[in-house]
Image (cartoon, rainbow, N blue to C red; front, side, top):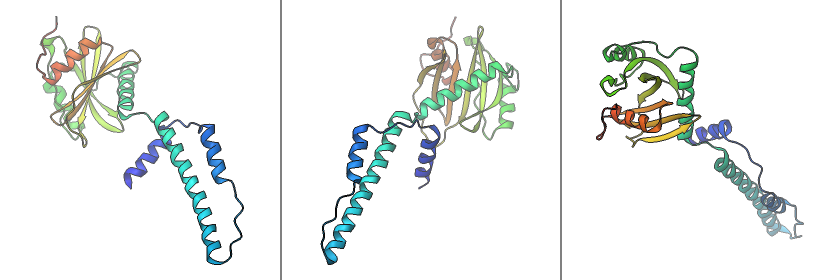
Length: 223
């Protein structure tokens, strides 16, 4: 029941509404059009009347279900797409408001304790300076209405935001890539944590950064 309520709220909030095709509307109008009831006396007449009203109700319910299906297929954004939009928005905000970090430090032993005190989890913080991606700080951010850790790395003049939070009811996932509004996005999960990395770096460099951060085989130092 709770899932049905959440789906209804999601559809009302995020879905685009589309008019039903004319053919479908004509069919529903035809089904709902009143028809003369046969003059049948007694219980048989009442049964026919009940069957006519039942048919009209079924047609009305069918119309609602088809309308919801059309709306869902055409207008309801996927969870992955919404997450990409949110992490890109957070990345852009951090660059625009001159509030990139709450704790500015290249020392993982400074950034990690600070974040752990602000959150109810302790995010992994890696030192990738030797690989060409120095840590420059961290901050508290919000994704999907939840507080998350934001780790900030640098690659030449490019800023990389890495959003980290505990997995919620999901298993580890393979890395996935996306692009939105000129930014590249890389997501993966490992050891009970979800990671989203966002930057204007080229896709190949962000992929290599993700491999280094995740400690995947094949990762290596970049020039």
